[in-house]
Image 1 (tube, rainbow, N blue to C red):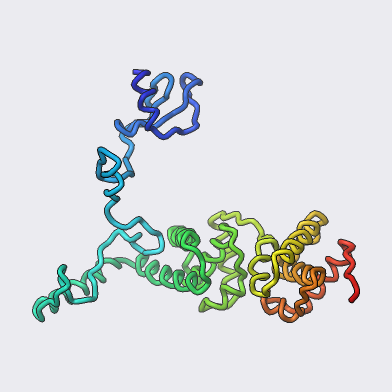
Image 2 (cartoon, rainbow, N blue to C red):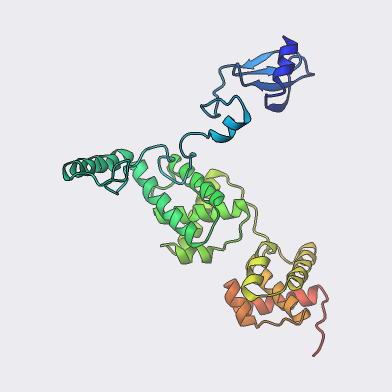
Length: 316
């Protein structure tokens, strides 16, 4: 039996979990029998494991290359996770020919009932509206697909725990996007999300603090380093200027100058200081406009970085 288990281990997926019986082997998954067993003593700790792989079998490399998994993958950005069917709005048959008027009326009735069946209760109606709004805001902010999925999962968790009651759907959806940005370390400010949302910045911040506490998201604070590339691209600064700004921010972080201050303001000030040192001067107004902070903030953080880090600006 042990020899058969060792042969299975070549194809099985290893899980680095030590066996509780012999304390020598590791648990592996036998995909043929659907069991989780020890590679040393053969102890079965789990059986009847569901196979999440494809429904087809391939006997050679050509078959494996040609055959694919049926259907689209599951996505959390659709209220039914993309598992239901849709009747197309174009009144054509499978060959592309126009259908008859009698059949057109029948298809119209099928389509109407299909829309009603897909959204059956209040929770699905909530998800339909919220996920559509979430997708609209994420597209306006040019956010990647993985962040849309993460934000959709956060909103679904908020719905399951009944955190939407008493709050606007748009506010919680915008807060879910902001939480997803924080967790995926994609630099987006509350002001940027408020610009594309249908609620104000205060409402988004209030909803974010609430769902972050209730769902225990534990999002780390945003670092000013994450904003350097985006701000420098908007200001058309060189790579050397970006490198200098990152050095300034790392030195400021070691001195504790970034804690308790807005990351966008510190990043804008570091870029302004780097542009002066690299002779690629940009005005404080241009930098403040890109970073969406005030000129006073840029000026104060600039003076703080210059004096605390003992950086001297060469005179022209």
